[in-house]
Length: 114
Length: 116
Image (cartoon, rainbow over all chains, first blue to last red):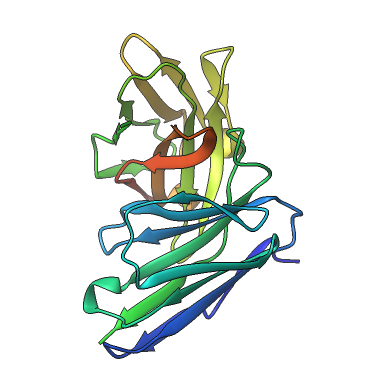
């Protein structure tokens, strides 16, 4: 029933490791997003994909690589994790990126890098 | 580039009192404005949005906001708050990104704490 789901909910890992976060939406939306929320709750967009095509790519280190196997899934892979990557990562989706439609957010993945 | 300023990082208020959460944005040709709410340990949920038309926008849970172009503001109000309104509130503006309206620029959030 969950509209936008993310796995895992919590992720604790060591510096230098590679990890992935998965996101799936069952709303039939064309556009999906990844956001990063830091420890001060500041929320910033990282990427957006529309029907598997990259639309928005903000200033994010190359260690972050989104992958969209189909329009219902947008995964985030992070290489060589650093302490500063610790944050809550939110996936979201909207009907179409060309209009200011409501974005539906997942519950978030809390990443802790030690 | 667009920006959003939420003037209050924390707003404590007693139950059943009115509340206003302030938001100012940088000006642009076209402005689409949003208020999202984040309950503890959850994702964000849309409260309301302004796209065009009436400057007074009504949202869910009894919230409303008024778009003021001359003051570049989009303040959120509720006449009587409940304990369950305790949450983080984010104001956001949609920035045109090469034809995409999905690039939301968020303010830093206002933590609303409702006390009994």
